[in-house]
Every structure is written in C-alpha cells, then in structure tokens.
Length: 306
Image (cartoon, rainbow, N blue to C red; front, side, top):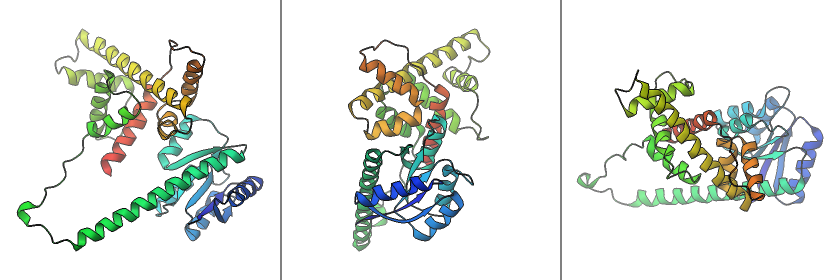
C-alpha cells in the first residue's frame, strides 16, 4: 500500500523538490502541500495523510507548535521535521513532540529517500502490530470468560526504576554507580507536587539527604553532593561513549538516532566519535547533566502515564 504525504514548508522550491523525490522514488503520493502552519493544519486534518513533512521554522507558527496542535486533534500521522537549524534544544523538543526523523536543509535526495524509507518501514510495522492486536482482541472475545476465582488481579504499578533501567541499558550505562543516583533523582522528581524542575544543587541535596536522613546540615552533605555529581558524570560519559561507538558502526542505528540527539548535546557526541575515529579514547567528554535529567524525567513521566 502506497503512503500518502503532506508537505508543509514556506519555501516553494523545497516543497516541489520533496514532491518530486517522493513520487519519482515510488515512496508514495503527495496529497497536499502548504506554505504555513495554519494552512498546513487545515490541509492535514482534511487529508489525513500517513506521513507529514513539516518545516521547523515558518512565518505564522513553527513546526513544533503545528505538530502539537495536530496531535491534540487526533492526527496520528508520522512526522518528519525539515530544518537547517542545529540547535540541539530545539531538536530535542521536536523529538519529544513526536517526530520520527529530521531532514536537514539544503535538501539532499539520498538523505530524503533514506529517511522516508525508514519512516515507511516504521509505518508498515506499526500497521502490522495494530492488525495483530486487533486479531488477538477478537480471539479473546470468542473465549469464555474465566471463573472469577481465577481472574487475574490488576497489573502491578510500574515504578521509576522499571522505566529508567531499560533506558539506561539501551545507552550502555547499566552497571555504572551513577545509575542508582539517576533512579533516586527520578523518584524525587516524581514525588514533587509543584511540577517545577528544580536546580541541580537542590536535586543533589535532596537525594543526598534521602541516602542518610540525618545528613542535612552536616559537613558530610557537601561531600556526598559532589560524589553524586561525579558519579553522574561518569555514567553519562559511559553513555555518550557507548552511543558514539554505535554511531560509528551504523549512523542509522535506531538507538543512536533516538538517544544521541535527545539525551545529549549532539556536538558532544560528534566530538566523541571523532576522537574514536582518531584512536583517542582518553579525552575528556563534555556532558550536559541538566539536559539529560530533564529529558529522562519527561520520558519517565510519559511512560508511567501510558
């Protein structure tokens, strides 16, 4: 089944180029194009395409705002962001909004084809899994209900640890002493009621006190706070090194594409990759602890809600 595409970009030349690439490569059919976020929203809700190619920066409203609006209105399309911006905060925000991939300007035909083929594969897999779930639901409906005495109880509630450990494992960080601190930090943040992401010092202090309840106000508190930060830096350094090694072997690896730009400043990942290519393994790696914790917190929240 051919996919349907909508393209939203304020540059007419870019729209036409993407249309030609999609149709000439037999990737699918372009069912509509728009030059702005508001126009694009109306078009997409009307056409219900399988895939949306969305420019990040547009005159009326940016791509992130437009995608968030479409999702709030029930649009389940796959999203690909188009941008010449390399601001990693914006890239991270876009991924959190729900985009599948980035296509960078100026448009490169090979990159566009490669990205859209991956999106097509994901779309096909999602459709396949949906069909399986639907079939299983129908089969379950044909079965006689089990006696109440044998009915299973409610599934146990997932914890921060349940969510964090698989994420850290995917980034090659499990086994680092800082993993315990990351789980404790997530538990602390989830237990807050004000919804505010506090300063790092406040987080470290709260976690240090939770390790030893009588530590507050003692000279040992500062020592433990510094130890927590050092353990986190070592754990994140292990993670960035692991992802860099994956990226060197396969730049399109799903783990690299997802975790590297989302959890780390991608320039730091690239720098580590360059060091590895040159055979330098002992260089100091920059890590943005605050960004990592913020992204992890958002992902843990999202998974616990689902």
